[in-house]
Length: 248
Image 1: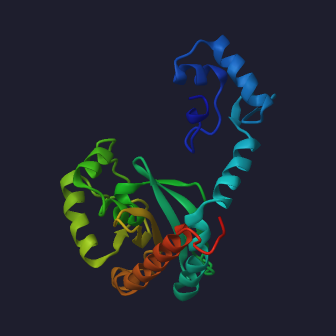
Image 2: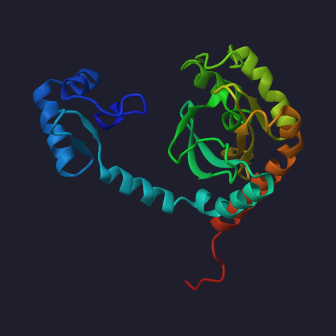
């Protein structure tokens, strides 16, 4: 619970703030923070007294990413897509109501989308999120959006009814587009990576400035994103098959 107090909005917290967030007394939090600090899960700035996440979590994150089969199998296909469209390419998965970037291939162009591995974005207002939500049961989608649908831009989807109606054409064409729904000036097109049960295990996205990635452009490149997502799905499926040639 202490570690989960930290976020992109609150990267540094005092012991008092942490105690308030986890609902524990200060002496208990002080003892737990001491243990976490010794193990390098958090670190304390001696000048300010603020705590922040420590280097041990970064090491564990790299270990997780290094052994993530989807990320490893997808990487060459993501590079291929970047070479083809010269925009930022991301691989993401759904975590509760957010998508989380597993991999980011930066655009070679001077003006490009700023994205980083581990970054979280709300699923309902992103192309990747909608690509995944379109292949989930409606009741699951409704539970996700019950967590909230804040208005990020004038183009953000406002209601759950609007979102549900938005998902049907995504299933029909096999990819989703987002036009400045989360951030002004940023558009994206994404396709889901579906497993053998047609369940969305990830999404591949091409994202960039709206003046380059117009609606017409995204509808044009959407099929190529869909093809890449299917190739990744095939690669993941092949990698998960048992080796029948192995002895034993």
